[in-house]
Structure formats: C-alpha cells, structure tokens
Image 1 (cartoon, one colour):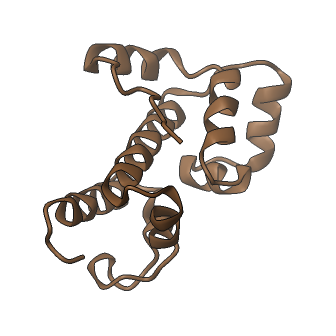
Image 2: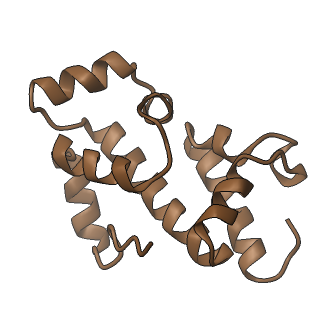
Length: 132
C-alpha cells in the first residue's frame, strides 16, 4: 500500500500547510488509508471526537497543532511501513508492548511530540539493525 502522502513535500511547504490547516477532506483521505480510528486520531490530536465531527460538518480545516500532528503521524507511519516492509507487521509492532518504549505500546505514544520522537528513533534503530 504505497503511502506517498507528504513524501515529496518540502519543509517550507509542510510548514505552510501546518499554518494553513489541513482541510477535512484531505484528513479523511489520510484516515481512510491509515489504520487508526477517528477516536484514536482525536486522542493523538488532543481534541474530542465530537470536535472532529463538528469540523467535518462545518467544512472547516484542522488547526495548526492538529495538522502538524496528522502530518507527523502520517510520515511516521510511512517510515514504519518502509522499515518493516509490511504494513501488517508494522501495525502489529505498534500494538505490542516493547521495552525500548518503557514497556508500552508505541501507538500509545503518538499523542505527544516526545512520544513521536521516541517511536521515530526506535524505528531508526530497527532500520539500522539495532534490536528494538
């Protein structure tokens, strides 16, 4: 399942997209391609599911912080699929308690920038053959 989302997007373009806010239609395209529920996305972004439903109903864009989080999680997901070379294996890993992340599931860390960084660093270790 190739996920070319944001792959060839420059840093300047990503910054501007974050500032402008991701339109809800693009967000829905992303949520349709990634295996996270609307409730999980809401948790990752620090908003309620009702807020996301209201944004969709009012045809608004996500805010800067929420857009930034969606982009970062999408990029992390793409990296994970590349590292594991199998989407199902990566999804299983996201739901497995691992020692490197303090014995918690990596997916549970996607709600903070520090957690995203830890998961990203762990994927980098796996990519370069360091057991994680």
